[in-house]
Length: 338
Ligand SMILES: [Zn+2]
Image (cartoon, helix red, strand yellow):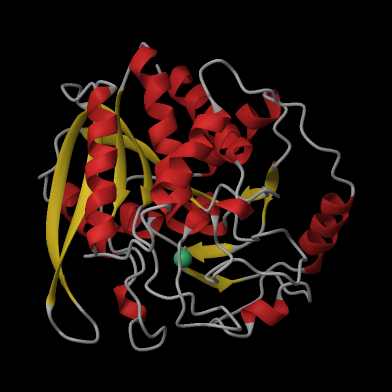
């Protein structure tokens, strides 16, 4: 996960936010008061995994990815992961396309090979939707108070989106779809070694992909898109994200309504954070109305404990059930498309 640029004022996240470049507070304490009250009164979800979604298998994928170690752009582990995901998706019937591009290492200046992975279902269809996530991990856990230059596994931040899409492949294999679906895994979402110096190095893969879409170099036309990022928190909390709400309010409301019908209470239909993420280039450059499903509060709203961008972003702090809940909602959305 990249940057939060704006948050409703309040105390609970302040210690985290000081280290980020927070810009403004918007419409304020009301949200937070409600949010805190909600998290205290949480009663759990009645959701049961359907036969189409296997939460244990989703968690196994997450573990398998994390067992590769840190997976920053250009690394051997990233390359290995790409091979594993490619094989997995092809075995389940998808067409896989690699979209390579070059970036520059911010420290050495050397070229770094990056690759977006495009997993297509019904590739012949022009009418398409997009599900996407980033699959690189941040080079260092720079928010870690003990060891900010330590080992960053990125289980939730980088791994969870991949595990979700791998799990969804099983369901899509059997699903009669009315539209083409592309899962796109973005490289270079946060190839940052120094937050201030490298701030323009966010979203390299999604920007490249969006440029290719704008140039007409990607087949098909996308109706809309959904980005997933950090969706494996054991204490999952998914709020509307402000930019997403502005770009595609209807899709936000539709997705949260599906979650409500499935009794997945972790989807909370109100705006919380405003976040810069891969959905911005998709909206702004490719003009694909895309929303971001992101749980920025990892582990939970109001917690002083923080796993985000620390050495604690590990599988033990993630949940297959959380991945499964998001997968279940996305699957229902894909089924609903006419
Ligand atoms: Zn991140």
